[in-house]
Length: 433
Image (cartoon, rainbow, N blue to C red; front, side):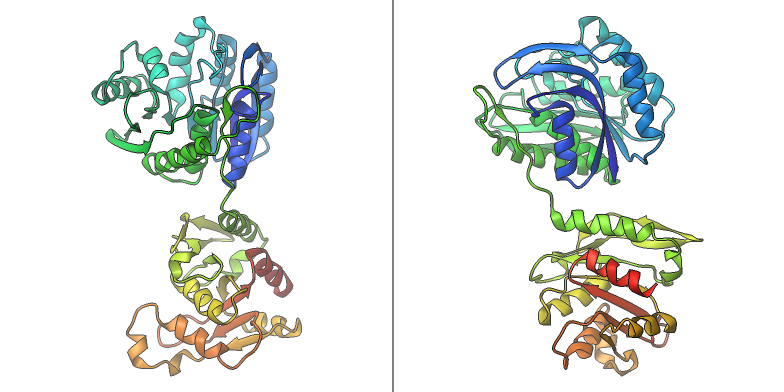
């Protein structure tokens, strides 16, 4: 998954382009960038900022969008009127969701948007926003309203929505109280998400919030779901902030869920294999990866939907979720009970030629007969796969590469390809294509 950030450069790497890229990477997304301004700042002081020439901003955006598939865009520091106009001209006709993070002033006091650019910011960029993420002072600047309560925040969110932003998040860090409550206006409904207030300031927490929100939107999640995730990640980054300079601590992102990162990458590679549609069964395909020593399918990551055949191509439908797969996850769960290192699998269409190719490559191949399953188990939805895998592996001493069955009344034949990791599964698949 690819995302683009259009923002200023921060040499301290706490915020701006550098902070965004760190967050994108930590969440398993590939980050592109277009730099709008160069700042000189550290943990103690803001020294200066200088805009990148508009033609250079335009060229950066075009170079990315003309070559790569981008799932979401984040706009941060835009600095001046010319940059705003350039960004608007390049993005006004695209269909990619945009997260607009108003960046008016740095934590260390630097001016990040010139005074004469506010009207253009509101007129041109607000209507592009799928979601806008101002804090309370930024919301006041945009609306001209004073915000002292949640009711004030609701009125401000409605006004920002009326100015063109489709969804609005007003971050509550500047509101008084023992907790931080973010107000969300999404699809004309209000939501609130609260988190304990941390007794420290940090540099970059706001950028981490909007960058995490951008990745979640890119994954197809709703605005409320994305805010919940972004708030959690931002909270952890502030809690884990490092005081590596002489001034304010710099927010630090948590490491990525490597299981999600590895499986997402493998699914992308699987879907891009030339001719892979021929391996998709009628019930479609799922690809899973388990945590070490899974206790249930809730410890196994898979697609909520499926990898679906669409003519001569495939579509990845649905999001990755622990517990998202039932049948393929059940197969892996049963496998890990005897062979703990075998934690990934994909189901593919049964074909005798595939079995022959696997035999020629000296795969360890097992099968089970679904017609022999006790009727008492057949009547329990989702139990057949566990029964089949358990019976197939009960007398072997090493983990199999492949297990298949030839179907039953109304049940499609199927092949399951197993491996230690998703990459290992793809390596085996490449050998039998």
